[in-house]
Image (cartoon, rainbow, N blue to C red; front, side):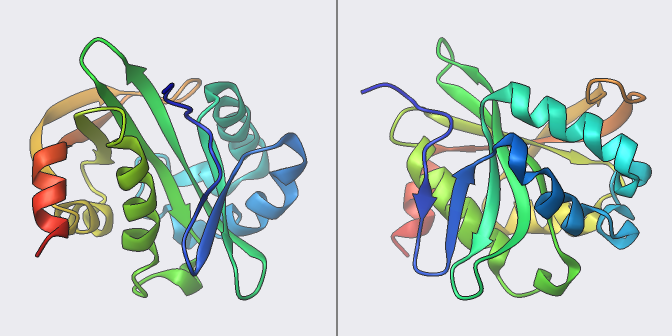
Length: 180
């Protein structure tokens, strides 16, 4: 079975649809709130021209999703798979953001569970980059069971390099946490 980095993923509350060019307006409506990016290394991503570059790179990644609330049919955020490495059986999950009204409601955990459960059918390690000053995301990633393994000085295409923490979780750790 081939690892498709853009399947439709769904649970009782959310659907992750492969990102399409015509999703820009709905996703930008979420991303245009400066508060979404306040702890993010790229604070200006709420600006339309900056978000357009981010969106275009998401489209090029062939691993990006829009996140839709099934109850309201509203786009509430975005996320993606990226840097799949078949040789090391690993992939990154990230570039995730949500509307502020979704914060603190367990949505990130639910979405990441969908992504992790799917990805671990094909790979053994999931990696995540988190901005060094993004405390909110560091806490969320740790709650998923991922451990900090290092730091990277990296930049999204077209952006200034920033320090990001590298987190990892392996399949066995994930499965053990799910069986509790």
